[in-house]
Amino acid sequence: MPLQGEYAEEKTGWVKDQLAKIDESGTTESVGINGMQVVVFTMRGAKSGKLRRVPLMRVEHNGTYAAVASKGGAPEHPAWYHNIKANPDVEVQDGTESHDAVAREITGAERDEWWERAVAAFPPYATYQSKTDRQIPVFLVEPVK
Ligand code: F42
Image (tube, helix red, strand yellow):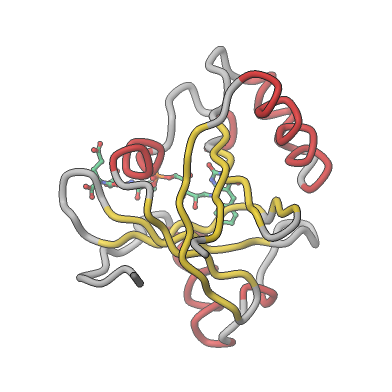
């Protein structure tokens, strides 16, 4: 079921600008970080129940995506980490396409495998990990068939 409800506004300036550019062009390909691609995850706020759109780097393999809660190597998890844990039903926009998906946090060998893919897609993730004591959480975001 597609997510429905009221949207909350992104408050970080550069992220808000990227979302506006995606809306204007209709595709996530209109933005990026140093030429690396971005996808947009829509998820529900844990407390507010409002929908939040969160752009993250594009880490994809065989139609499954990873959501990497790096927050630039900040000491704390991003707020969306708690939102996606509470409400794992998300929508993924990649390019001009959107689909429903379910997210689950991965650990152990499964996380190791996807962490490698994440760093291959966006090498700064490795630097972010070295900046923080927390292990950066990785979610597997699998399409709903
Ligand atoms: N962030 C990443 O963590 N990883 C990435 O790979 C990544 C890539 C990326 C690419 C492009 C781009 O434009 C942004 C990118 N970001 C990436 C940044 C990402 O989009 C988020 O801005 C960032 O991860 C911070 O996430 P955040 O959820 O902490 O967002 C902050 C700015 C924010 O809006 N916080 C709100 C606030 O008011 O503090 C959160 C409010 C919220 O979620 N409230 C919940 C609710 O119910 O509404 C309750 C929260 C709770 O504590 O229960």
